[in-house]
Length: 169
Ligand code: HEC
Image 1 (cartoon, rainbow, N blue to C red):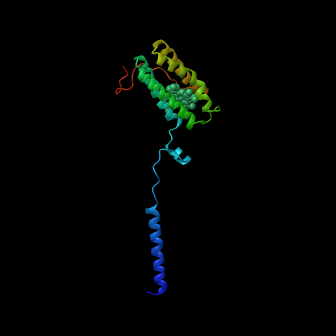
Image 2: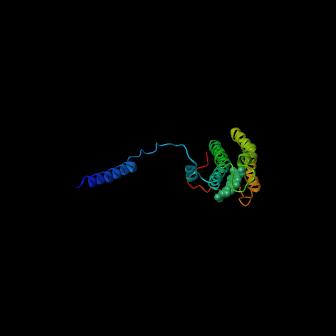
Image 3: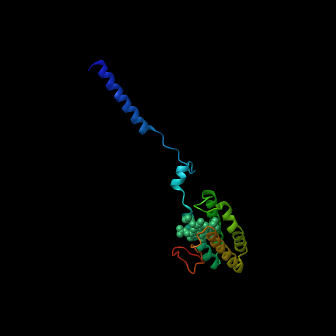
C-alpha cells in the first residue's frame, strides 16, 4: 500500500468511526415530566375536543354521584371538572374561529355555577345540588352557543354508562 492510499484508508475509517460514535454515543435525553417545546406540545397535547370529551365524562359522573348522595365522589369529580377547565385555559387559550379567548369564556360560563355546586356538595344538600348542577349544565350549553358549537347539547344523564364504577356511597 502506498503512503497516500494508507492515509486515505485511515481517514475513511476515522470518518466511519466518528459517525458511528455520533449515532450510538449521543446521550439519551434526561427523563422529564415537563412539556418543553412547541413541537412536543403539538405532538402530545389533547385537542380541545378531547378535553371536552373528558369534561363530558366528569359531568356525567358528577350527576350520578350527586343523585346517589355520594358526596365524596361528587366532590372529587367536581375537582376533576375544574382541573379540566384549567387545562383548557392553559393549553387552548384560543380556538379555531372563536373570537373571544377561552381564557375569558371559561370563567364567564363556569365560575359561578361551579362555586355554588361546590357549596351544595359541602353542605350535602340534594336540592341545592340539583339546582347548581343544572346551572353548570346550562353554562356548558351557553358556551357552546356562544362559540357556535351549539349543536353539542349537554344534558343530565338518565342512567349510568359506566358498568364498572359504583356511584352509591
Ligand atoms: C369555554 C366554552 C365552553 C365551555 C364552558 C364548555 N364547552 Fe364544551 N365545547 C366547547 C367548544 C369550543 C367545543 C368544540 C371543540 C372542538 O372544536 O372540537 C366543545 C365541545 C364539546 C363536546 C363535544 C366533544 C366531542 O368531540 O364529541 C362536548 C361533549 C362538550 N363540549 C361538553 C362540555 C361539557 C360537559 C361542559 C360543561 C361541564 C362544556 N363542554 C363546557 C366550548 C365549551
